[in-house]
Length: 182
Image (cartoon, rainbow, N blue to C red; front, top):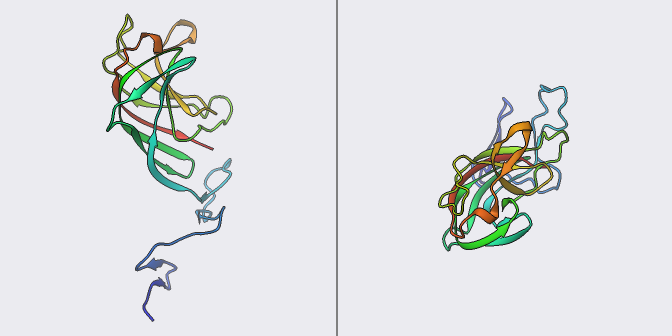
C-alpha cells in the first residue's frame, strides 16, 4: 500500500496526501490538553468556514441601496465562534430612513451585558445631504446580524448613528470587522 497517514512515536500525526476530514457533526479538534480558563465552556474547534457574503445595505426603518456590479460581496472567515469580514462595498443608488445598516453573514452572539457587541473599522465616502460623516465605527449589537454605522457617543452616552435619510444614493467604502457568533 501507499503511505497516506503516519502516527509517529512522539504522538504527532502527519497526513501526506489528502485532507483530514472529521465527518461527524459536533466533533472537531480538541484542545483539552490544558484547562487554562476557569470559565471556559469548550476547547473544541468544530467549525471552519470561508466564503463570500452578499451584503445588503438598508435603512433600519425603510429603504435599500443597489450594489454596484463587481462590489456585491464581502469576504469572510469563520473559525469556531469568531467571524472576520472584510472588503469593499459600493452602491449605485438608494435611499432610506432610520440608521444605515449592512447585513453580516452570521448573527452576533447574545452573551448578555453587551459582551457580544463588536466593532472594527469602516469608511463611508461620498455621503450627501447636510450630514457629512467623518469618523464612523461599525457596531454589531449582540443577537443581531446587521452592522450599524455609529458616528459618535454624545453627551449622556447617547449613540448617534449615520442617518440613512442623509446619505446620497451612491456610496462606497471599505470594511474590516471581527465579531463573535454563537
